[in-house]
Image (cartoon, rainbow, N blue to C red; front, side):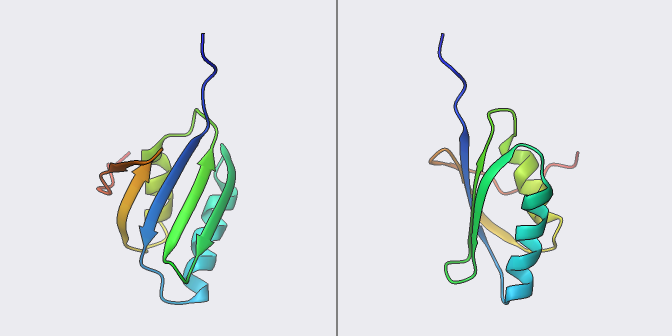
Length: 87
């Protein structure tokens, strides 16, 4: 029986200033199940490492709540839709 793996989610997010990346940092810091994250204004990316229980859609929705446009996303190296599903 294999142990559940942590997930690595990567998002390309339109962030124009430090306040934008700060908002994304803030919501990820409060999200339960997030182990680590790196938000880069330079590369316009948010990389999030989560516990197995935290879904891609939940992280996507959390970032989208900041009002920033998520352009692309991937889960564990596979491209995923960035369409936010209403919870």
